[in-house]
Length: 299
Ligand code: G1P
Image 1 (cartoon, rainbow, N blue to C red):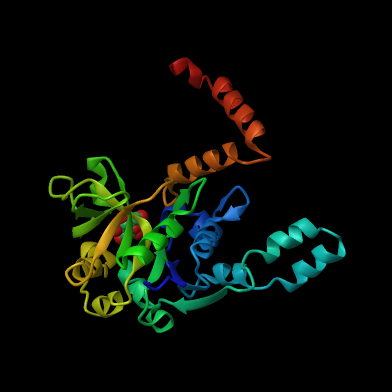
Image 2 (cartoon, rainbow, N blue to C red):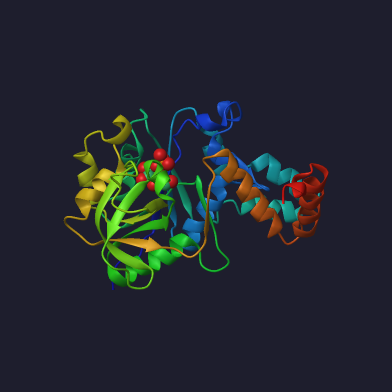
């Protein structure tokens, strides 16, 4: 039996400049979809996949993420005293008691690969997950990471989440070339970071979920700056696949790119329409808004 991932890395040291001025004080991972910050969705997905150790790679300005996962004694006491037990549960369940959060500082913003390397002392030499909280993945069934963790455990291969993107967008993603897929996964034989459409090996793009062999850390230590002058995780994965099987995994679910304005809006709309208490009101409100603003006349 192959080992099961128990640890997940959340690179959350980015500056989030696309969301300025909000991100002047609120890290982008703390932006909410309805009532939960993006980081909570990512954490829940990791826990569902079986992880009990969560490693947050932050920068020295990002106290909000650490504060969020810390115990809120005074708030809990107040809620308990005033009998607001439902809210108390929400606050307590931010992190279940069997899960531990570890914070590591990335002193310099040297790239995603470097951020992941900062987690090496906590992960050691075992398979682990990387989740980019900007990529929010919605699914009615198992979360994307659980699907990938199951596949990784069954095959012993590393798994990289992928989805098709329009060819003109290849320059925003890691792009893979694979062997034929069997079911949801296919072995990767090439991966390149943010290629221009004319040189991209395919239009199959990496999405922010990875199950990686611990060997990646040694490779990251020898990865020189690549696209954008940054130490790229993609470049270390390109070295990994020369040594060990790395599969692209077409997950079941819908991915929202919450690193962009429109992606965050789309996610909010979709989660509202699917929400057990808000869906009717959200649908009515959207229809009214479209009617009032005359958008239906465009049909
Ligand atoms: C990162 C990765 C890229 C991947 C993307 C998914 O890029 O480097 O390979 O396709 O996440 O969201 P970023 O969006 O951080 O520039």
